[in-house]
Length: 480
Image (cartoon, rainbow, N blue to C red; front, side, top):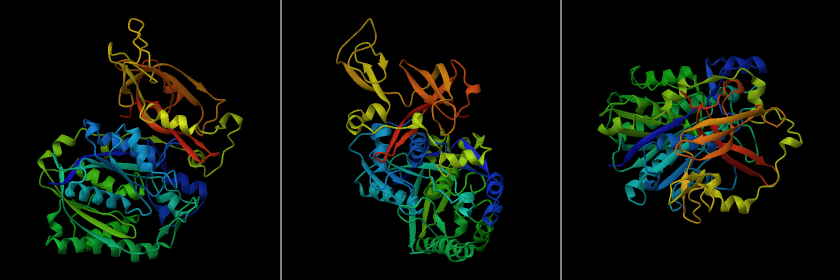
């Protein structure tokens, strides 16, 4: 029995109202009439950091040494040539012998990665594969995409034991269809006119995939408790449901008005939302869109109750902070270039050192003394316990998943930051260990000594001299 064994999600804390965007740009299209808001990653977030956050949620309570693979789907990787899945594997402190792969170039890549993981587990070549999907797509200022696109991530684990939703079947369509695209080297997505995308794309491809799956497996649409239909047009979303004769309760609620179109993560996020409310025996039909469509058929098992302790979609949606400035939003993705000054300059990355210290930097692994059990960060050969002082009797100890509290803090208005001021804090970890970290997703006035913290993986800098993205961990207040 092969299928989903766990799920997770990540939605950035900050949300911006679509009215703020349209008021700032003065642009009016059918897309800018969308109600609600969209999720915006902070200046130190990208597709990799959001995938890590979603994967951590998915791996709650799971032994990471048992993970056999990681697939990452995105259309916005930090590198044109360098495996993003490899960064995520190291950051999650997984075994180096796992199978890792990137899926890219289409927003349908999320469901493609999920299908590939299911095929690999079914074939017996791998087990416990984590499938991550996230995107940070940019729309040109004043464009419909700027209003539609949101940023978020989802993660699903695929295995053959304690399965919470079995994959019962799938159907795939592939078309060379020009609706949205971004050529190599371009920063912003391009988009053909709405009528073309709506009438020739969404309203034809998705129903064709659904009807193909129903015919292939001799099913009726009424058999499904939830049907996931991603669509950037609210009226057509309802129209497809009506044409397919779906009851209102069967149609999985869209997240366009609360998060936005999250690209490769869109369908998987809606699947996670469906699993959060699913009951044993429920059948879920998931579709995706992008150069055709995938349709996947899952059936929920009695193990679903074991996967409830997740942040998932609901808790991420409930934890939000309003971003009231279009200018600040634009600076986060360098849409409005900012002068960094000499304080913001980044020297050439020491590539050899970054490789040797990869577990210390990316996985936030320090050392723990095998004799006295004292943990310390960064990794050192000598135990810091004055009563011990043992040399070269250390084991790696992961701090990224440990709770912590703030020992002391300060803010710096002179240091460059895309969201000033820059904040720093000395962090004490539960169980021992202390180190100084940048603080993020908080305001100086909200900080207090002994307040609880948790670690979050973020982009530290971009080394423009060598085209290197530097990542490290920051501390933040726990989200509700």
